Every structure is written in C-alpha cells, then in structure tokens.
Image (cartoon, rainbow over all chains, first blue to last red; front, side, top):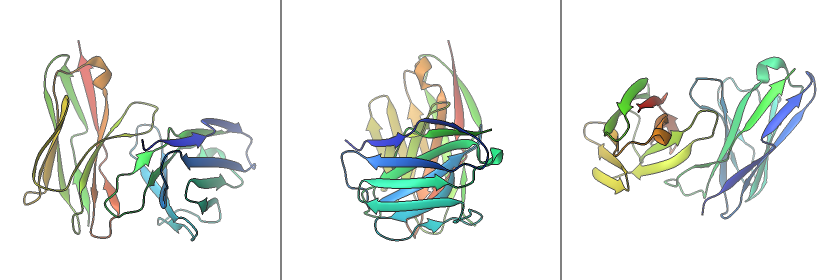
Length: 116
Length: 109
C-alpha cells in the first residue's frame, strides 16, 4: 500500500513555456501533499504543502505565482511551473500523507524537468 | 533554530554492519523518520520512531533516544544495493518535517 505516482517522469521544454506535473495517491486518500525540489547532490527542499480543498502553504522564498499548486481532490495534486526558465531545471518530487499529523509521507518517483 | 545533523558520507564493506547517526535539535518532537534515496530517485520510507528504543525491520534497525536528541540507523549484512543516501527527518511541534542533509553510504566489495 501507500503508492504515489507522478507524471510525467521526464520533461524537456523550451524557456517560457509552462509545465504541469501531476501527483496521485493510488491506494489511499491524501489529505496532505507536499512538493519538493532537489538539485543535484543537494538535499530535499520543501516548496509547499497543500491540503485538499484549500490553498497551498508556500515555503519562504518560493514564488507562489510561478509555482501554482492545485489540490482539487483527495488523490490528486498538480504543480504547474509557469514560464519556466533554465534555472527551474531540477528534480521535482511530491509526497503524500493521509493527513493525520503523525502519518508518514510517501514519495512519488519524481519528475525531472530540463528547461532549454 | 532547528537542526538535524548526520555525517555527510560513510564507507563500509559488503557483508559488514554500518551505523548512521542522526542528532536533532527541534522545537518539539513528534517522531523521527529514516528514508533511503538512491541516486536519481525519490526517497523511500524505511522507518519511523516516536518512542525510545530499537525498531527492527529485517536487515535495518532504527534506534531513538528522545532525551539525547539522537537516533541511528543500523544496516546489517550490507549489500551493494544499499549504496544510497540515507535521510533523517524529524517532525516538530507543528508536525512539520525537518530534513537532514542526508548521509551518502558507499559500499565496497
């Protein structure tokens, strides 16, 4: 149990385009989903936390207008990188938990974004 | 401030045992997690400790001492596939997960 999927796994796009990444919890209801970014050989960096049906909470320094998060259902959250630039190239990983405060976060396989 | 400390890198031999330490200073404590992350992949959950003591799960065990702000992950009978980064994370009083930078474990034949 506790499987989280992400789509797509790889994205290559031109500078200025927008990219949408989907995160789904396949076998449990994810009240809370998290979006992380990880640059090569660096640690995970939390970007935002989203609760189903409410606005996402962004970490300091993360532009909410650039990284749009929608958590419309208990099994789906999306991250849209708007007007992507080469510096946005990174490994984007979502995780999900069932929402109880002590619950474990289970991670999706990640999405590699390369902006040319 | 909140802080999670773990060694940057460790090396061990195939078949041996290795212990990866993690010390933490957080505002409150609501559990400690260990994750494994292979290069280029997302983290996978290994263990969760909220009470003091040792939790054993196959070749992996995790220990917690809340009074000392200390945990370790013990890996036995090391295999080459155990080469990965091991991430320690603590949930603080707000149930926010605070991440360590990870320990890169290199297994040599």
